[in-house]
Amino acid sequence: MSMDSKKATSSVLLAISVVTAIHLLFIAKNIWPINGDEAQYFGWSQELDLGYYSKPPMLAWLIALTTKVFGGGVVGLRLASPLCHAITAWVIFLIATRIINKNVGFWSSVTYLMLPGVSFSSSIISTDPPLMMFWAWGFYFLVRALQTDLIIDWILCGIAIGFSLLSKYTAIFFLVSLFLYLIFTPEMRPLLKKKNPYLTVLFALLAITPNLFWNMQHYFVSFIAVKNNANLHFTSLTLHWENLFIFLGAQLAIFGPILFSVLLIGSVDSLNYHKKNITPWMSLLLFFSVPLLLLMSLEGLFSKANGNWAAPGYITGCIAVIAFLLQKKQGRNLLYLTLVLNLLVLFGLFYAQPIVRAFGIHMPISMTTTNWQTAGKKIAEIKRRHSNTSLLVDNRMLMALAMYYSNTSLKETYKWNPLHLRNDHYDLVTDMRNKHGHDFILVSYRPAPQDILQHFSESHLLDTIHLETLDGQGSFLYVFHVIHFMG
Image (cartoon, rainbow, N blue to C red; front, top):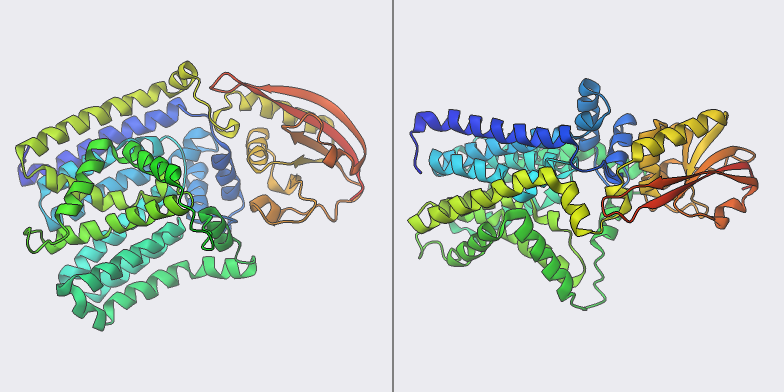
């Protein structure tokens, strides 16, 4: 499995190009209907800002760029995902080549890009791809900084971390991993007495400063949302074993059962890297993988953790696992098997919709509705017939999808929020308190939302739209003309 050094770079670029082309086909084929979160991200990209309710702004900026060039359809919306993952794979090659060799670099890059989690992530748009891309660049510059101790490398590392934080706040764990490594690695402890690691922190903070100011102006909603999403209750010591097993099961799906098992076994075997002749570089790789995985496992045990929360750890985890596997013939055979299985998953995603239908897999309606284009056109036509009306919606996901598919701007849309809470982005940016006397087109999943209708002098059901879903269960949208808002 070794390769000539001169051929490694061209080989990895070819491999990245081929796999990325397949990921682009996912988008062109639209293997998943656009979901509510994706529609909301598109809406954010049309209202560019320095922050949003639950997320920093990087994803919205990227979508604004791709949709500017490729339009607001599914390709323009999702294009950033496979491109970010392709760049991440290239940076993984650079990292592994720098600290181990090009052979490990090649197989680490290819393996990362073919991970089940990366294949799925490439088929939708989310905050994870830019998070992973900038995290990888941050680690690359960290490796250079540790090798050269040049100030510019420490600064570039900090800027990359800052951009990663602007993608997803999970990137804070990069700094946690860095200082854990410096503290617990004897050879690196002298760096704690130097200014360079703290320059990294400083420039990361400078990069995210605009988002911090935005949060100061908006009640720190992003950080409150992150806290609520984590759902930690330190007053309770209840252990949620089921949630932990669900989280660990998700890791098997994201990283693959073979690679995940090798990562765990290799990590335990490397606890004493001096005795086991494990290099400090291997220790560095594991410090940026295992602590994050352990922390999110504890989050799952004490509360609930989403499977993708540990995803950045698989950047260095992938390099570490490939280095372990390439040491022995049996390990190389496991790598072959892993790539074959991942290839099956890769092509199996083309049949995602038939698989969901065949097995009746239940998924949220905001993720699996297949005829939203038709529904959106009906909503747009109804709104056109009733001039001087705004759109009114009582559900965040529904609001995002209704706006996207009916081509209605946020300025023409309101979220029903009678208690003036701040539970989502639309609660934050829409307010009906100055809309007394106005008429609306109300869209709801509920056939008789009396809690809303009673606030209007008149209401008329205009249409009932059937929503087709992948699991075959279906649902309905109810469209009302509500007249004269009474407050």
